[in-house]
Image (cartoon, rainbow, N blue to C red; front, side, top):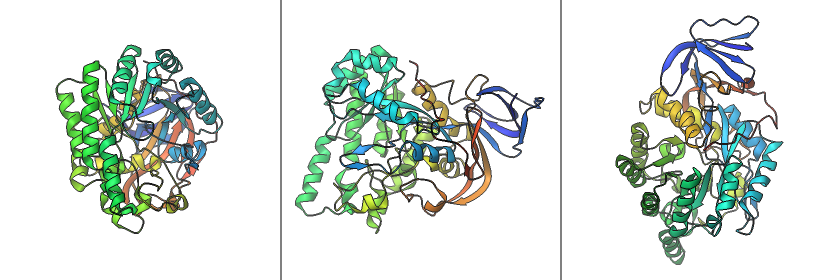
Length: 451
């Protein structure tokens, strides 16, 4: 054995037990009581939780939007992930246009990450209009280890409902999972035009420009399509009570519908758009109401929503300030680094989630859904030794100064947390310890998903 974590509480998707964890090379070697390992480095983690590394299944690092580039690139994004106990991220490969092949965009994205990533990573493949018909290309993507496709029901890259239906059927044959950004394009377009005509274009009107009804209708439409295709479907960044209820209702009838939400939809409300820093809180879909927050917590606790990810898409204060209206302010916020501690402090400590549920929604469930389990999302022998030592007694107030995003701000500024990652191991290697990043660019690996 190379490393023995001694005296902690092991938290898995099934249970919490006092046990030791032995690591050999890059793998978990054993989990059990009173383990011994001659010659191993012993770390006393008494009173701490030993968890599988978190997986942020929805991030956008080094993403170009028009002439802008997100503030966090593959290096800074994965560095801050390591500092937050996240050992695997799943980003996106998006063609520059429908003329660029899926495999070309995928290879380009892999090339960008290879020398920069500090933690392991997977990819979702964005499918643009017309590309859903090319089954050979879609299969080539799956064969390369990308087992999920991403489509939109709004924006310029939106697919029609008919096209999404075609993709769902092909994905079912390939064993892949279609993930969908759900906002009804007609509702969003009409509301935007109405607000512009009325001269109500300040960023404070962002939430009004993308109403809850747009998300709910799109989710209902996509669920119906998936039912007709007999295919599973995954709804990203669910922000509304109605959206969560639609997913729960479909699941109660036996349909394979999965839902993801984000910490900002659990903890923040649209009141932020009335403040002087309203631009900093612009993301799509927008922040909602306290009633939506509570509903999302309830559905997460009940298992109707399976994953919490961040949709980390960071822009600097300067990039945000350049926006003059809700429709031209860069949309997105940083979040990967605070994913685990926020869910612990406000999910577990507030009684919404048990510790095993925390591990399920942040680690085991995304690993299973995206073909990474049991290599990731598990502490079983043979799994990658991606391990977080979590100190449930550490108190911290979140500020931009003690976080690592190049955006230079956090939407959770001033949040008081009780419980924070102490150390992060990536495949047995210590990459973060007591506030210090110890990793390096290029140590992260692409982890192909399996269907």
